[in-house]
Length: 270
Length: 329
Image (cartoon, rainbow over the protein chains, first blue to last red):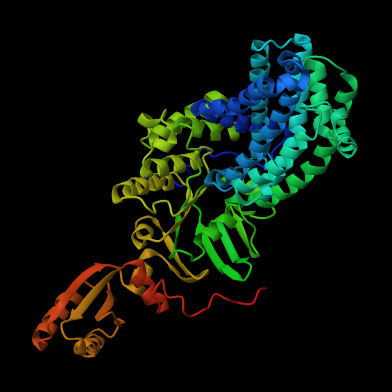
């Protein structure tokens, strides 16, 4: 009954999305992740439990023997625990992407005129919120336990450094998340790498107490530099040198894993 | 707007082929969908319908052949194709944790709409799809029919001119199916071109202007629903004699009286596809006169099984002849 000329107000034909459009799509994807947390607040409880437990156990169980007093050990170990937790947290980026890739919602993303990288970038971006949340929880609990903060300004800087480092090493997790065929495999890979990596560092103990071969490794371990940087910024010790090595490591890890992860991801996204 | 989308055909497919290792999922398919019409792609599970749709919607790359959607090549101009199409797949492309309204607003934001516009469009679609009452409930609380409607709404946020519906009503009850059909009719009335895959002959009959029947990745018949019905019989008459020994006599009788029909003997019964309403009473009188006692004599809508039986000579689940396996190109 309608004339042949009637046309729906269709969207214009678009080519590849511009940089501005890509940024806006990434933010929309991040928004989706935040809304998911709003509807499932238990995720935040889940995120908070393990750092709280680790902090309480390490300080009140090991503290006395490690540093003579729990309060001295708290000053030492908080930075290390924050570093370890940040690295563990990046694992969820990989498991989340792995789960999403196998669902219908990614088919919808693929059929939309949006940048191929937007779903991935949005997820990584939103996961930084979890990093900030965790550092707040740990510093907050630390303060309740008697932790003495070097200064608020340094603490903010520590948060920024942590986010930058996490952004870079998230790509290791993304790579595993894209390549692995199940979430469980991502978790196993991540655990096998992250557990020894974080323990063979200065996160929990003075590396001078380690045997020579272990010291040699611990001195170059990126977790040592991140833990030292966190400790320097939050409580005491040198800042400049560990900070520099933290950024060097972040750059190296990013440069190696991001292109690999993007290549594997694009092959999946077409 | 000077763009190649002004052709007579919104979807043009030539020799489209997809291999998964040794498996030939889609085998040199040729198809055309006229702009503003519904093309029904009818076939059983595993016929290659979804694989074909995924290639046309730029979700996977063809092994060989070409496809143009709105005049744009699906490989070289994938971004342009994406800006023209909407896709509703077999698995709901919605986020179950988000509410219906958030799901639609999210797609609108992704498509570059300012937030107020995205919200308005979401509200508009929710009301059009009779989901306004559930707008602020998480999608995981939706019924199957509501989920499909939300999924369809999500594919329409950007007002696509060409819509791919991959088995949109599989698993829905008849009422929900009817509601979805009405929505599709409304879209077509507004000028949208639809490619619809389905396992249900009735659905293709209800919605499609043209139907392509596919099996083992190949198109085995095309035509308007009327043409196909003439070919295969819109309805099926099933005649089961009390005495199995009379099956052949029965078939001979039908062949003699109705030389145009092609009776098939299977499972102790004779089935014939019929279009002519006179066949049933004529046969009933004839059988009574000859004293052939029957246990079943009924007219039903042709099921996909019968369509396949007629078109291919094998049942849908019969995979004994391995005609899909072919040397790779």
